[in-house]
Image (cartoon, rainbow, N blue to C red; front, side, top):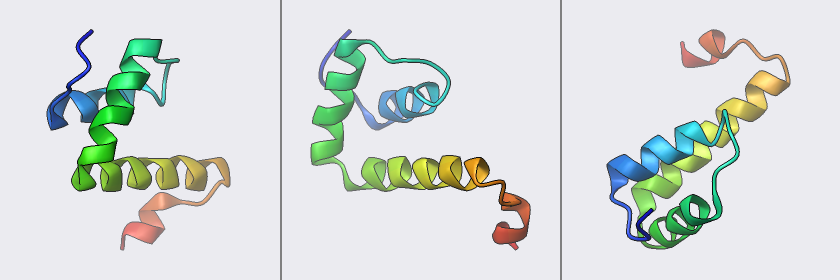
Length: 65
């Protein structure tokens, strides 16, 4: 696993991280990329918020209107 991820790889790992535990090198690569990339950080915050809302049982479709 390389440490310098591009945005596509970062997005893929962020999504996969919702379903499985990431390996140490995957987490390290994500941290490095997120320190430098504002858009990927925003995407991470967005998916974390969606995860939290679904845990609370909020109907996301209503929020999207």
